[in-house]
Image 1 (cartoon, one colour):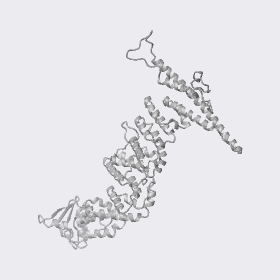
Image 2 (spheres, helix red, strand yellow):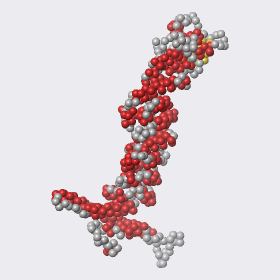
Image 3 (cartoon, helix red, strand yellow):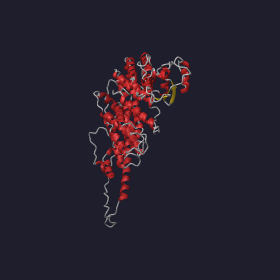
Image 4 (spheres, one colour):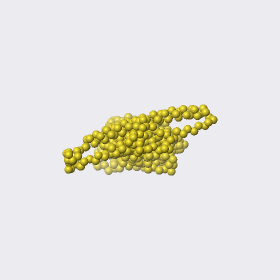
Length: 589
């Protein structure tokens, strides 16, 4: 039957009432045991008859009075010794998966073996383990979890190893037919829907014991790529409470931070090596936690490499990783994402077709990332340019995404020098801009003038090429209805193209006039009088050349006759210089 815990002296009276065959109230106690912060007044005979440890202590008493015995570091402390004493006095108590680890360890410590009594406590506890405790997964996990409190004795009696081996055997046997379904669903954002029943039992274990269990499962044939779901469950349980998606780092207890750091590094070391065994969103969550907890660089680089190999599956939120510190640095960890991108580019599999298919997705993803971080005023020009240059040209179907990122960056950094603005704008190929982007760029005051001119030029050239290619209409004489329906939208498109052409000419004309105004103000500002009849030049400041870059640019623009007049008429001063070709089919005027 179960007994309640009593004070040390009351415990003696309970023993006297239930074990009168050994002693009565007239027999005083002759031994006092001090252990676990408590004192027990007991009798030698029932103790030494079953406890080899106490028999050795009582064999050489220093005096004939009450024997005083100190038992330090006994497994289970006061509670453990009390159970052993009850057994010695013949008081029944119930063995369970919650107390069997303590009973087994204390019986080992007190040497309660068959050498001192038949059916001693050690033999009874072993029988319970073999016949009841280690027969089920739940029982084995419960015993294993409680055994951790009795180290190193639990390891000495091989209790932890036996529990781990039993768990690995049961899990491997039960999961042999469901590993395939686990792998196919391991990237799910709801791991509880794909893991087996045993996973919930295992995630209660301490991280070092949890690791030993998983390694034992692998040694018994469990496939490592099927560990993904249970690792997700364990990580979500143990890393709960970290503000991984905020823009600031929440202060936590240093001890808790250290424990979570060890847990995270262990989980990363257990991740399957197979690609796609873990979802990118889960890997991203681990990387955020690694940065947050300041794990080892090896741990972080491992996660960055894994994300790089699966970057084609990522979405923008997966790579928007905060830097978690505000000391003049950027809001997002740009360096980390640049390393992820480099890992993606360096990755080369035999199935390169899959990577080529992902290239366009990755290009759009990185352009979206650039647009997101461009508004950060602490983002350096060098970082923006360096990250942009890592986007492969073959990944860019259009330059609209890059133009959007550049425009946002220029707006957030209005104090950039002309040289820096030119470097930033050189990241995009103006020939790949859509008509909408060209129309926006032509009126964008944040862009350098040279970039706007390039945009206008390439758009004009594209319109001319479109007109040249669409001017010849091949008509089947026998299909009159098709010809009519085909020519009508084509005619409308040509009219629209002509209108856009006129608008571009007008915009370029205004740009030319603005260039001349800038040229004039530039010359007036820095003009100096001639030394003859005027104020002489300064000896330390030579006269500025009259021919400036803008003047040169305006002269070059003057040679582009289609851009000079909105009505298409070439000025008389330039007709001889730019005579149109006779074999030109379609005039743009």
